[in-house]
Length: 496
Image 1 (cartoon, rainbow, N blue to C red):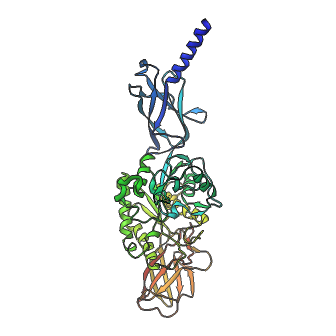
Image 2 (cartoon, rainbow, N blue to C red):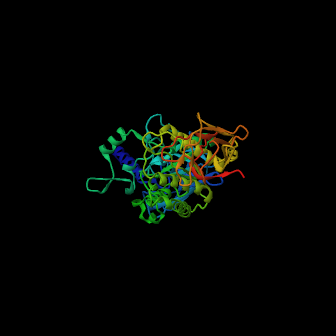
Image 3 (cartoon, helix red, strand yellow):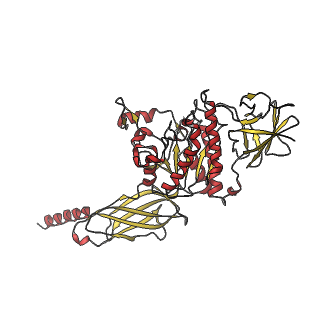
């Protein structure tokens, strides 16, 4: 009989122990990255549920601790963060978790040995990726950027994980704006075998986000979290801030929702878009739409000085809407000087993996260029990144004695070219290109100046362009590989 009583008592004890259960359901999940604040730390605002065995548990403390590796993080051993209430929900906060990781967050009811944990948490910098296909990533999945343990991604299905290529998978995204239309012309999320087959067989998808994050991690040692939100083939109208309240049925609304779901605070944004606005009606409006987008993001994100780094559109193997293509490129160059806390990098010299998408190898180049801009602004005291310049920007073109002298500002070191300098064209007053340049060299007396040898005369009101057309060959950059962007028409001034 006594053995029977002991068995019952033991079973009851197990039942009571299992009944006292605590979980984290809000504010932290495996592999999440928390944006650090100015004091180089983050506050973990978490919540969850608790199931208790009896009412005597009400008022007991809920405790938390943070560990890293096999040790408890200094000053983050078990501490009370909440008390058990009548309702099953609880919330609490752990303040001042330092930059770094990976961390394990554990919670328990005071006096209990049963714990609930969330693993592989990082405190670092969050970057949001947005725009169209060259940000989404359509590079060949060959020699892609390899994952890094301290670079995580909030994937499009709203799950945190170690970042790896491809970052964007639209067909299984949480928000329906990204889904493909089915045979009934309705958005449908892919799941099961259909999704598995797509993921296994896809050959395209490399982007620039992971390369950028890996470069920033290498330079600073600060963990990185990425929030991929891009969608190929989309225009500025589709990214309109006016659609914010449509939530997951609009690109802007989806981006805003995911920003909030990832913590509501980021270090900066990378943007690559513009190809879909290169037609007659949209191109003239591109600049003000982009400016409105930037202002709206900063207002909605409550980060008025949010850094935004973007890419000037590059090449397209196509002969339609040439003027509009160059007009969007010019608008992107103009935006850099009209908006605070933004910077642009060029892609006009990059190779392609198809008719419009940057190659996997040169996406890494663009990522390095973007990292230089971010390092200059955000980490000026690290390895003298503050001494970096934006990259070559046109100043003036002057004609004298058969030579057009083209001067540039913001050059790092000196101008360089891969082989014979290419990309410049002379145009008449109607805008038509005139074949005049027979030799191009970097001025030996001024490393930020290019000399274009054109002969004795120029057309009246002649202008200079660089990267004219949709598929130019351009190869001029500075010693840090910041490329000369598409520009023009720049009036060529004649010597008095």
